[in-house]
Each structure stands twice: as structure tokens, then as C-alpha cells.
Image 1: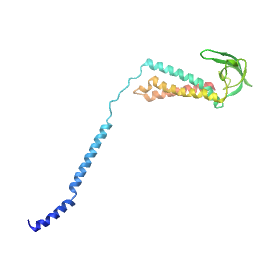
Image 2: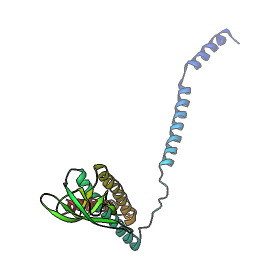
Image 3: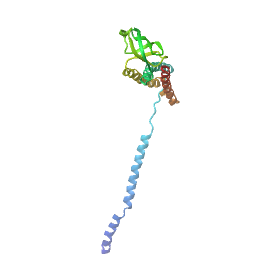
Length: 211
């Protein structure tokens, strides 16, 4: 082997080491392969699975559930609205003479409520029992058009309207579920909105009547 060939051989080896074209090409191919695999994985994850569609609720159960929830809404609104008005300061103070108290499943007392300007026989709520028949107690009522008067302190008023308001909201959610509004494929948002509009309307009507 000639001296010239031996001298050229180390130079060619250094040139091969210094030329990064092959290594860069292989690196780019490896990076491209990794990105392609990642894109395929994302496409498989984003592919929607089979949607299980629920059948709309039948008319008879939906109507029955709607009527039951409507009755619950009216009851809780009727119980909570007068107490809420009186807690907010809309009340007239006076005295009540307890005339009768009935026992049984739903015991209740009645009495003659009197203020300086009007008097009326009203149903009594609050801290009044059968032992108070004939007694004259301090009471308050929302006005002459009300049907009930309250006997007791402010804490009792909160205990009358706060649980009623919570149960009222629960009845609103139950109305959405029982009516089948959430199971509609078309117009579901409008049906749910109608249920909540009716829920708010019942409470507003109870507040207006209790004024």
C-alpha cells in the first residue's frame, strides 16, 4: 500500500465523521414516525363510541309525575311564603285569642287575631298548642288578606321557610326528571326551561297571595 493511500485514509475517515447528513435524515425520519403514531393514537381516542339513546318517557308516568311534583311545589310554596315575608319585615303585629285546637293527623289551632285597625279569625302556626285555648298571645300576620298568623320568635320563622325552600328546589329538580324533559331528543332545553319557569311561577304566585 502506497504512502499516499495511507495518508488519504485518515482524512476520508474524518470527513465521514464530520458529515452529518445521514444521521440527520435518520433522526428526522424517526421523529416523523413518532408524530405519526401519536396522531393515530389521538384519532382513535377522539373517535366517538356508540351513543346509547334513551327512549322518551311514556305519557302516563310523565303526567302522573308532573301532577305529583306540582302538588308538592304548591304545598311547599304555601308553607314557606308567609314566613319568608314576615322574616323580611313585611308583617303586622297584634294579639290573638286562641279559640280552638284540633288534634289528629294534622293538628291545628285557630284564633281571633286583632290589631289596632282590623281583626280576623285566622289559622295559627308556630308555638301554639291545645293548652293555649282561651289564652291571649302575641302574634304577627302579613296583612288582613292572609289566612294564618304566626305565634313565636324570629328563629321559628326561619325554620318554617328555609326547609320549605330547600324541599321546593328539590321538587323542581324532581319535576324535570318526572316530566321526562331531560330525555327528549329535540327541544330538550326548552322543555327543561319550561319546567323551571313553572317552578319559579308557582313560588312567585305564592308570594303574591301571601302578601
